[in-house]
Amino acid sequence: MLPNGAYTVVVTETPGGCTSSQTVNVNCTCPTINISGPLQVCQTATATFTQSGGNIGGTWSLSPSGAGTIDNTGFFNPTDTYNGPVNITYTADGCSGQTQIFVIELLTPIFTNPGPLCQSSGIITLPTSSNNTPPITGVWVPATIDPSGGTNVTASFNPDPNQCVSTIKYGNCCQSKSDGEYQWR
Image (tube, rainbow, N blue to C red):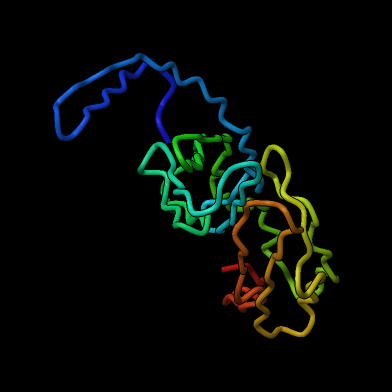
């Protein structure tokens, strides 16, 4: 597809060599190319983008280039060290569409240590919201710790969906110290 502009067309007769030229203005309007996909992608996730309104068989690109990679099917794989805006572009036959997304930093939930604990401390219910701002929500497995058993317990925090958060584990909840207290390690 020719870009918009003025072009000179020259016709030469063979044999004889007579020529004639004329200027032609090309003013084509590109179709609107829409790009669909998530507006936010976690550093450790992937996403697929699709286009509509343009011709198939085009190419996908992104900027900045250090933000990740995008293949010819629109499959985006962010770099795990990049967070910030990314421009996703689809180009076909000289026409392009673009959208801006954001790669979100992977967060680690922060919780207040529930210990030290004694066997007589009673059952402790683990919080469903972290100390982060804004709080990260999720569930602990197990949701409660009972130090009366005096055994090692590992609790895993599983964040709710649609949060860019790592799963964390606290282990050895009830590891006995010499003075009879138990603590998280």
